[in-house]
Length: 302
Length: 302
Image (cartoon, rainbow over all chains, first blue to last red; front, side, top):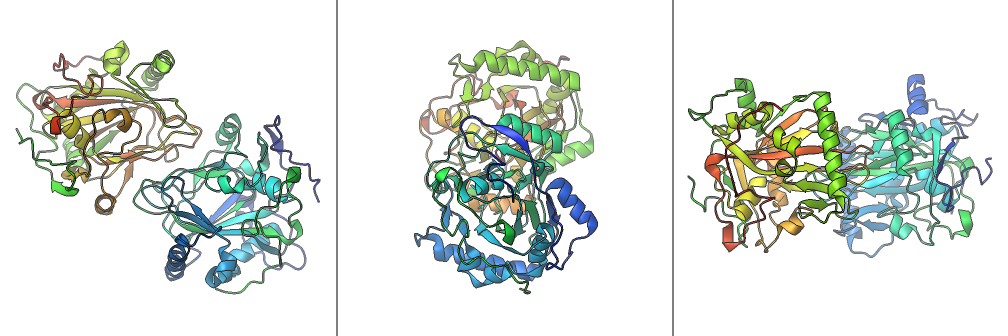
């Protein structure tokens, strides 16, 4: 286990760049059978910090998931639920959190071997869901999401000890260069960018709309992009992108007429469960960062 | 000459779609010699409403233009000049207007035969500059520019009689899928999208930052994009895109570390000079819409 202070961030004076300490692809424990990825896929993930698997889900499955997502959107739009995040400006539904607990279809989806076994394979252990959400990113007025490392937030605000988690984004609409696809900086997962500024209490209430704390320095972002370039995750609906918890990513806005929707899970190693947040912060709500009833997921076809 | 009322727009009740009345590529008058475009290029422009000519200017020329642009940016940043438009939010310089009159290099650039003769060829007449500007679109925080037809504004607010003008954008940085390139809807120039809402006086003071009047309806935008698709103008610095005054276009924001800068001229046919603005509006300032000392440009190498 890493020391809690390996990755200092959000002190007033320490914007900087640190080397990653942990592996990217973990050696599998005995109990975790599947090596579902090929060696070139594992190597690519280790090298780039992400992997795009085209059309892992069929168009029929995508249709079912998309319909369910639209139902949830209608159901939750005016229900005053904390799990619903609105678009800045328009007030449209931007995201709904905790969908793997709120909805039986998404609850089954996180257990589907096509995604779950990739997470177990890369993280080399049993895994559980740290966070889940659906993102709508509507057409015409979908807003940008600025560059960030998820781990920087999860480490600070959730007390996630180590870089042993990954995100899995299942595309529910076609993603193309015009509708604000996820952009990743290959290789950025090898560097921890510490950020300036102290975290205020209940920062998540603002940061899920627009992040203002935990924002990486422009000079360092430019450095990472000059080193590794930028890759946009374009693909047909049903494609899946897996990316390391420390891969720098963001997305431009979307004025195209076409929404850019996805469902998004964070798998965390069962050996990497949350501790206390940094700097005496109160833990974030359960629907953003799971602490209760955490147990390893068992693969089960959708 | 078209009737002044051919393209009704900005009345309260008339969002709608009208067929274009004018040609796209005009037959050349006797006095205008050059057919500088090939027949396939003319056909593509007529069909799509735009034409991208890769690397029309050399890297050395681009370097000179880019340096001049940076000089202007510094010189004008805090000069309180009306020609300077700030980014919404950050207050950084977004655009400087009227550069063909304010700066001798840009004054020569508009006369360069590589661009001027294309304009004369397409518009089939002598031409002059209706508007010019440099656009910086900085990295990290460049904001989107929503879909619009330039002609819709120029017809309403400047009294431009007919669709016989084109824009010429010279890329001064590489434009790629990540830094918010110009997006065009092929074929959209054949349809006039009239917009709802009346124009307030001095609308340009807001609209150059963020357009709120003359905004096309979402259903019609979707219709145009479903018909024609969307094309991003990607290319090396020095490439030039020419597009019809009525081609629907816009751009997403730019969170990438790389600026997306260009210099932008509007060539208007000398036979299409401005009349009175619609609805009794006051003419916009000379630096946005030229009325004084208008004369045909003579080609002269940069």
